[in-house]
Image (cartoon, rainbow, N blue to C red; front, side):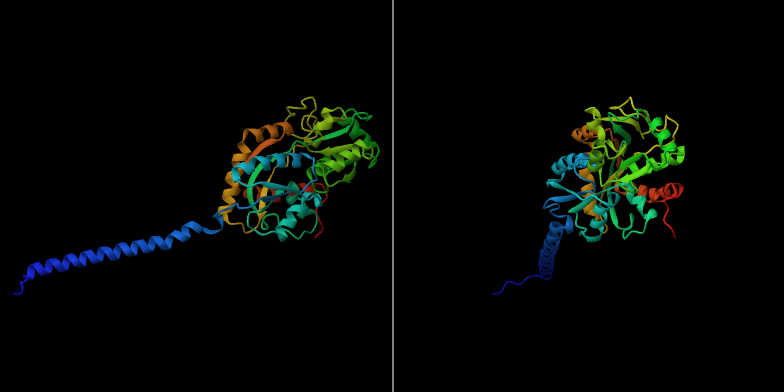
Length: 345
């Protein structure tokens, strides 16, 4: 005889089965969702596994100068924070813009090609027609430092002070040659400004970088040199005489040399620079690079290198660096116009 199940018991069993089935289906759905999310989280776009190979950093100056010395040490330090080596590629020319402009035109925005961006990026577009835009064609990653610029002569030069050089150039227009690192660079423009403020007329002799500039002076082919602290070793060795610097105050290492400001010439310049990538870089890669480079910037070994070169600490976040670039592009136009170097419409 069959056992009769009371309706109330039956209802309880149905409800229990339904509840158990619902829980199982819910758990299965949640498990499926988790499984579907897992590959996306693991891949997480182009940042996953970045960097997986060495990074190329373009230094738009020849080997041996202050920028090259600084960025080689910076790259060495930054490599340990990125977990990949950073390879320096020297690509001088065009006032420091051959390297960055070539990168902007040809390199992939994948975080594996970067460049130092010099101050000439914000001047040359006002002086001549160029194929690149200093704002739109680059992704700004981090601001690093600024230079100490100075004017030197050979140790056996007849010129003992900057005042003697100025007086000679006033009495003998374009007879006193001053080597610099290229048209539109700060070593060029500070001499143009010195001439504008004093009435002196110098002979502008552009080179691709510090190495050529130094060889020309030491070889007796130019009378004076305007450059960043790539001249430091030669000054320390007694081969050159430092006459004047262009900082807000005297340097720590060469404190005997007066500044252009204290001599009444009213010129202060340090030309800050940083690191950029091609336009269109993934923001996550931009942040990853910024964070690693910030650690390298603050690393004691890097701070020691800045002290060796007598260069200032100049940190700018990615957003602040871009904002500074936009402002500087506008302000540099005024300087170019005042020097009479503005391109014709």
